[in-house]
Length: 249
Ligand SMILES: O=C(CO)COP(=O)(O)O
Image 1 (spheres, rainbow, N blue to C red):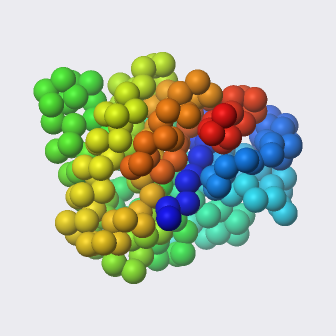
Image 2: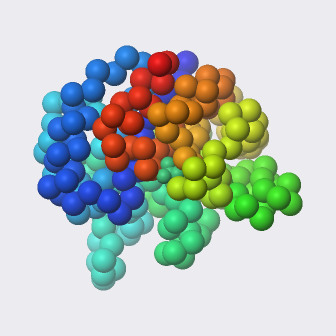
């Protein structure tokens, strides 16, 4: 019912030239699952990726956007530019942006509303720190982040939102949440969405992210609540990303 999604978050990797090379390799992949495949290069590499991806089924995502249309915001990128390049998805509120770039629930919410209003789809990241996990407040943290991000979203638009559950302690560490733990937390996130939007929650895709790779994708994707993955490191290597995309094995 929910279309699976495998999205690569390339973070601050791959120059435009390297992007062209990686996209060329990804274009050779035969997708044997029902997954929608998305790649999210650096802003400066989006044009190269967009050019290379024309005519393919691979979708393009950005890693951030500003909520204002244009103006005096040095170093930022506006949504009109993303639309011009054919970007369909925008990652918002990644824990690295919350930690290093002062992204807050409030700015994430503004960006979610902007992205939806412009007809693009946000991939909203939520996740708990190791300390929060150890004090058993994972569900409270991720449900609060989810509700804050979705504040003011219209019921008609909420199904365009993708949530990515990314435990901070699992990102880039090689430590994954167990498939059952990830499934349980994602179920809690869906329940929080249901509180706000009723049965539309059943149509919202919720991904797992955090050291998801060619080795563990099959097990994670076998969970009923996990609708896909947001992949960092393993999405930078075509052979690994291919195995994640073809998670049935
Ligand atoms: O942060 C992530 C995706 O957004 C996950 O990164 P890794 O897959 O490298 O752990």
